[in-house]
Image 1 (cartoon, rainbow, N blue to C red):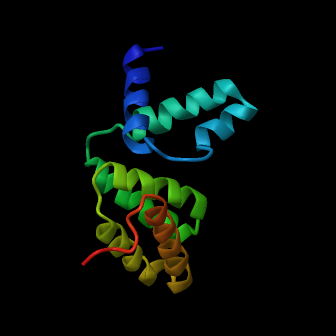
Image 2: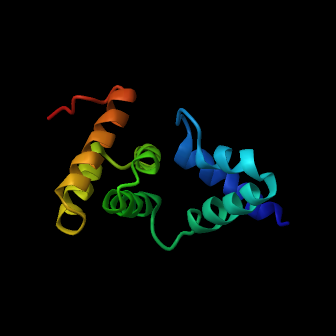
Length: 130
């Protein structure tokens, strides 16, 4: 296995998930199958998230939108943390969530805004200023 992909995986995971509390998906996967967890992590974090075709902030805003529409709230909170870690503002994240109301419905938007508020409270960034 290339040390380059291992280093990319570590670097990208640190960038996205630094300071995230609680169980991360990798930890859950590893508790069931260590080898598969490693393979998934190398692919998802080391290859997909590490790609440079679009910026990390853009990639995370897309992820927030998709997870909002799918109502995947635990994963959404993880990626709200990641979006903040790569430089997205709370206002940008909220705007992306509002945009999804057209396609995912207002209930999904409301749940996602609650997830955003929860993460912002955890980080001491709530209430928003301005």
